[in-house]
Amino acid sequence: MQALTRSQIWLRRFCVLAVLMVSVVIILGAWTRLSDAGLGCPDWPGCYGHLDVRKAIDHVNTTNSAMPGSLREAHKTVPEMVHRYFASKLGLVILIIAALSLLNRKKEKQPVKLPLFLLALVIFQGILGKWTVTMGLQPTIVMLHLLGGFTTFTLLVLLTARLYRWPSFLNDCDVRMLKPLASITLVAVILQIALGGWTASNYAAVACTELPVCEEGWQDRLDFEEAFIFWGHEHDKPDYEFGVLDNDARTTIHVMHRFGALLVTLLVLALVGKILL
Image (tube, rainbow, N blue to C red; front, side, top):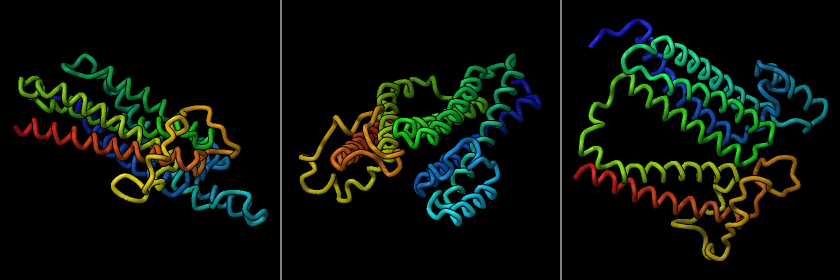
């Protein structure tokens, strides 16, 4: 096996760094969502025309002092802008990864298509981040943004594994036998993540507060037609913050998410059992 060049070593290091950074970006995205700060900065890429969050805070406080309640709370600018800072730095790291991959393209087993796809994906993620704000937290855009984040994380882990030549047993017969069930489980997990994003983006997380399914009579409150409208929601609000669906639609989304979690659990247990046996 040939010794690694300096550029290959740095490529590995940047991939590990990118995996750590995308994990932080996902956590910061959750912080932004849970603190209801998705519209804390109504413009993009800056915040009220400022790239420095401190200046944005001063602007909001000054404006609200002159005209109380005209802008959202100043503290909501922080989660949104911190998330943007880290996301933009992640984009820069992925750009470096793509450049180093092209530089090493003639090296043995050097992935090139995957780094370039990651670069395109992170650019699209930036566009989705912009649309999330400019389209007022439109649920489908929010859900796609979430899926894009997890996809970026997964592909960065895959790229890192390939660069470190791990794992080495992918062509083992016993492993290949797991492929059908593993593929089904993977699809179920992806759909469940999407359904979780749909639950969050429609503010349906507290539509059910009892276990194991929902409050008594939930079967009579299901409304699939309204619950899964992915575009063209009819509402009279200026944006989608705090949701626009009625309670029956939110209950439907929440219940489906719970049943999805049960299905994913059974599939994962079946896959683990097959691996152990």
